Length: 318
Image (cartoon, rainbow, N blue to C red; front, top):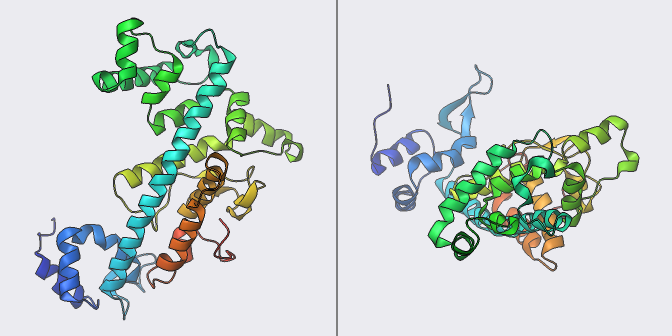
């Protein structure tokens, strides 16, 4: 049976009953405007562990848990989403641009080359991607001057660069996974992500040729971007795994975990690395470290592990 809906006053009483220290005025403000259910994810780590069932949490809070810390953590996560969304916009545009430049340079006299599967991997779901691309063009419709122009003057034929502009980040990510190995590598290197093939075994080289590690990272970044766009929680969350083994020699990426990354800190590292390339002089990495050091890590609800921060982190390198 579903639980009955409670009023804000009843929720405050329930939190106190379970052991949380609550200022009524502050809690009423937050619960009325953010909601009990949304905020419950931020106090989840403060719920006591069940001594009888491994991994299960009780409703009772750890002694000393304060609603004020929950509100501070929520606000820190909101600021982080804003920062990540800002960085992601620049990365999305840069990836799209690199894909367009590299593919168009190969067939400058055939800007509609994308209509043929020959430009992509043999196993790429080309027709499915093409259907998606045309649905994006239809969605843009009258709102896009470029789409209107090509519809009116070129009988609905679109050059690749015009198609790319209406793709969302997921579409670009899927397209990257369908690029031939040499093109994937070229895009990655233009984003300052290099692989030292001289130190790889034959099997490892085959892995990279089957799909560049950047493909799994783009999938992860798409998910993170969508979390930000829907105002969901970034902190204490796992994401699609992204391969780390072959890219740890780039810049500060040596801090990435072995084999694969599933937590936010690794993604923040990769974003910082790419942004230093595509946006020289960017202050984005320092804004991230400031937020982590001043808003997240001092909060008693936050452990470095919840963000994927290694214990060896020097609090500045990212």
